[in-house]
Length: 437
View 1 (tube, rainbow, N blue to C red):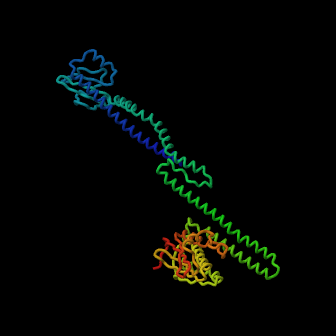
View 2: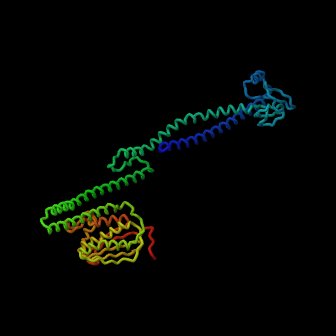
View 3: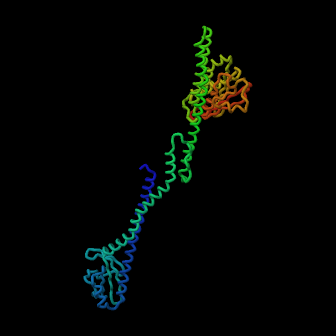
């Protein structure tokens, strides 16, 4: 029973059935009680009418003796002499209780009403089985309309449940008609208040998927464009190597080819790092030493520091327990240090410290910096302030921001005390982390 309509119908039908049973039972019991009261009133009226009558005429006597009535009438004198009795008459008790009583006559219960005057005693009796049969017949007639209305009520409930769920069915139909590329929001018109939040949440998910797909398409397009240049350069360098006239030209072509391969390798590594650093995905929450991660990242940048004839100074704590993705954080720190070495004049300072419940990593350089109006654009993918100059791919800061967002942190650019640019990475303390006291 997976259908919501079927479930609602079954539950409502069960509720209606229980209600009908209770109402029918109450009606049945009420009709029985009312019938008993009416039968008692009939016995009382008959006894009182005969009590006040002096002599029973022969025509009335004959009428009472036809046997068509389901009651017995007996008249007694005060001294116990039977003056009148319907025929055939069962022997009612000669000593009676005035008013209503229930007595056993011939092994069967009878309802008796007795009334007395100065000259006679009148008893009118009726078998309880007879009056009960009549009462049951009347009670059953009273609940027949309920039984006849039950199928109509069931059909009405089925239609009402379907009409109530019709807006939801329209949403389901609209979702089924969508193909893989249709991410437009589903219609909200006519939806009940209980379903509207669900569809709104689903529409929000569709919006996030549309943004993610668009970002993925943009990333693929940008990556294809960026890879075209180094691959074309490699092709040209292979041609130069093939056409080299002597050993000197061949060595120079090999050196250029090796440099081009290294640039292409670096670009591919950064593209893969950017693809892994999805802000919507939770990072690998593994215990790590954030200070050691920074030391390893600085060590990874030492070849570039030697090439640029620069120096990286560090101010790191001995240890800083943390939780997160060690590889992603190491790559982010390395990108910050590499950017500082490439564009910061060779003098770089890396500092790590606790700031409340956050870890603060600062990378300062002594280069020309970035104007405040252009700092936000520096985080765009493949953005370079001076295209064609330098060897960067424009992905370093984009990777850092994606990694920071993945860990719930932020990265900002500001002026450095060294005169250049300061990149500050802030990471909030994970719930699993315990700081050393």
